[in-house]
Length: 350
Image (cartoon, rainbow, N blue to C red; front, side, top):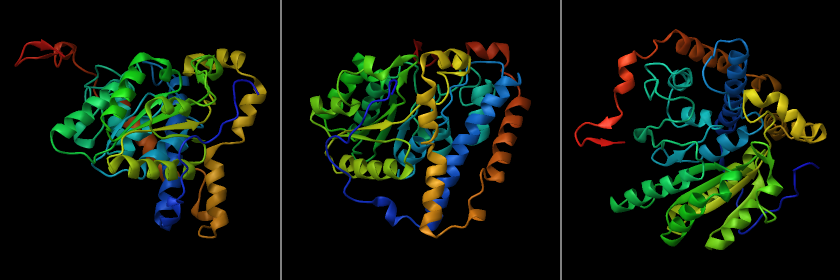
């Protein structure tokens, strides 16, 4: 229906149900993180509609929360991530505070980039967060550089999870990066968030193969095509990929099939209803990862309804406080626009 194609698993299968090793506290934390990602998204859309957020666009991730949570939960503290514009909660999951992330979005002086940019264009190498770029395919090449530097320093087991969109897999830097990673067996996990559209271009006009994961065959590396709306399937596949990469076997490509329930950004909401069939949207609404996971938890018998509020009130409060903090934070002073542009010690533009 529409641009949604039948998907299958490609390459190696995830034989181990890693999630069965999780404690009750882990299962609950995954639930809370899913809700954090959902509320984070909804709160920003609400702020933009009310005129409280006047800069930049809001790139929604509603419906894609299972990818953000399932790929980050099994990581070690010393692993790397390279998030993209629909992965803002990943910054929090990896150690940034909600206040820092909101200040980045609002362009405040105390944001990680001191107000010079917005959204996902930030990083913190002390937290293992690699600065992202809007040219999504290029993030793979940058990830290779980070991992090659680690190898030169004698570290071979720090894995980097780099996120990208299915449209970016048609760009040169994506293939150059993946080829380099495969040749040198770098511990890179490429997570392709296949939400069916590159802006308004449907996936069948982006990729000629049956699955995006088929691209892995050209580089002799494992490729998985999985249900990106099932947080436990994402978690299990990521665990398998981490073991493969840490063992020195090279990169893994994971295609997470999901759906962008909103427009490309807030400015695209009306137009998105024109290039996407209503039936397609309704179909994916029924595959919402949050109620799916909640039903799973209830069926385990480990949780009562009361233990799984929709949404958790404390998370709502946490995100609202972070927004108020950002709004009340100082704007950058005009003279700071000329700071942090050059490496003054070398006189070389960054």
